[in-house]
Length: 123
Length: 139
Image (cartoon, rainbow over all chains, first blue to last red; front, side):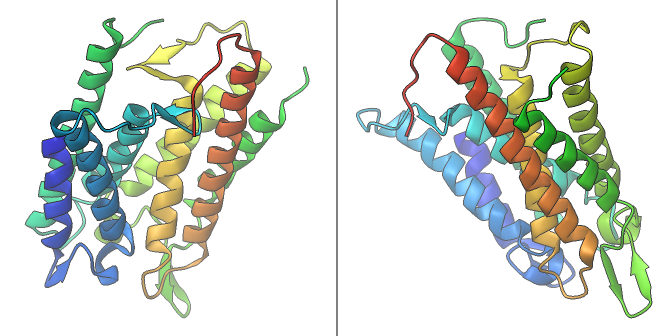
């Protein structure tokens, strides 16, 4: 989660299209800015849990656990950056971002499996 | 069968997202492109179509055919949470593209539909919480 979140933040500053960074609204509108915010949130949650476990994070926000919120954030960014790789003029930044979002999503699922101590899917 | 407000809201939102994919998302003057235009949007149109169908089908099945045995969870997420995630993704994408110069009405309709799905799924989650005995800590 931590690595994926940090890479999402870095990816948002790199070029997503010809001479446009992810943070430029000329590329994909606000998507780069959402990538930066969601990546920072995921990295912050994972970082605080790892390096400052005494910090009292809320277990849930609006009925959703922090893990699930992080998962929704990373899955959202993964869907739209991965879906965009076939458009013309795509640069390295967008490839880094979808890979980072995929890593973060896998990290969230693994964290949920660790915390539940149970298989992740059930019928 | 009486539909709950959350189910109605999610269904309407899913249909709005589906309709939005066939409208113009980008264009100038008389020339417009839908989200299926690969050079502009990659295959995000296909993803958006699949998300909307997922929202519509799962919500409709749970409302009109409760005898159908859907999985309760997938990768640790309940169906309501997955519906919320799909709606949130559509909302973020529609809202993002709506800020690009030349964006058209399809983007805002997708954002509106996504928001409706999020609200509907949230209402469903709340109704599930209310029926549960166990109190939950939240902020």
